[in-house]
Length: 129
Image (cartoon, rainbow, N blue to C red; front, side):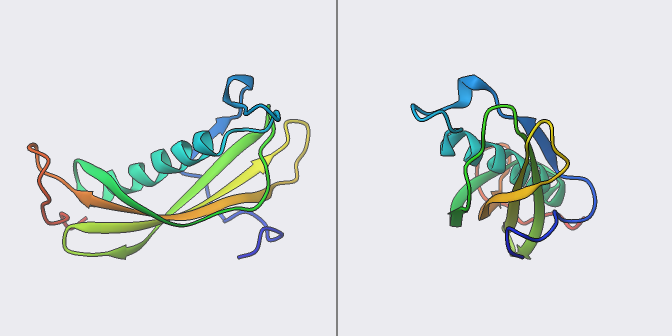
């Protein structure tokens, strides 16, 4: 999928509004804020997939296509792309929609790897859904 394609079908995993407190000195939204939103979306899919606690262990293929501006609605679409014995890889596509527009554009994408954990923080097999 290129950034010119329409957003994925269906509802996003999460949505957020980019606020002034999330900006860098240039006035764009911090990449770290965007990455944390992506981690939250991936974590939601990981929790549902594992049936419990999980933790991010890696982020791969992070690409920032375009900046996000204050007031943009950010929609994050998270999809399970690989399931291991204790780990899950979740792809997240992030789209921005300017507040007064109906047009969206892809701004970031990445793969997040999570591991399922027990109550003591040790890896456990992913529970079948």
